[in-house]
Image 1 (cartoon, rainbow, N blue to C red):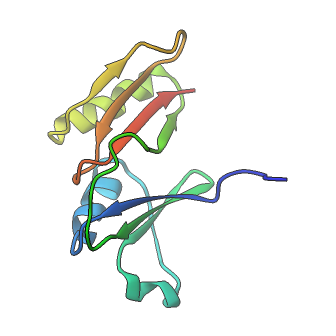
Image 2: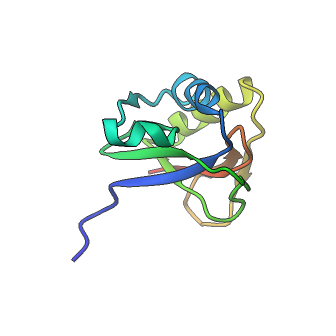
Length: 121
């Protein structure tokens, strides 16, 4: 019945669109997508992430998601290490995790404290 995931949404505090662009486009290299005219009034930014999308939406009374999170897949352990290095170079703390045998992965947070997972496929 379900064929896949169209997009994942993260929340961010009001006025954080430029910071979202710097982090998701500048640090992670995701392409920003134009929002449909009907969605612009809600603020936030949308990004391409493979064949899916990441939507960063504005939430008035924002609280970061510390357990729920998107998991970004990267092609191979070398590229995963490069992403970790890029995040570290941008001042983002990276925490490697060894709990899934045979899976290279780490956790980080976006600029507002939302949990992000990165894994090698």
